[in-house]
Image (cartoon, rainbow, N blue to C red):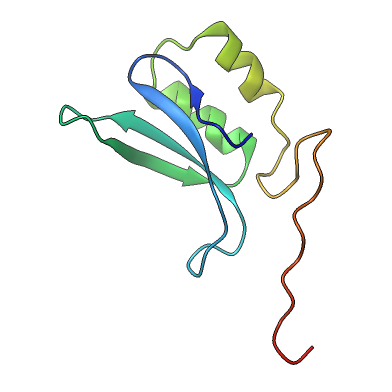
Length: 94
């Protein structure tokens, strides 16, 4: 999953890639603010936590989006079925 999952007109899920602050990828629940920007509501690494955030905040969810969420791996750092794992970064000097 690299494209956002549109839950409804105001909510979506995006994948947040690893960075200096985030050691592995995560999922972010975002809502559309009145000014037209997407703002994060939560950053999670497990599909269980993601489903909890969606249930608590997003309201009614498109059935296709709900099916996609149910099919997500248990953790965000596990590649989806049928995709290649991301290459590991080598540390300098190793």
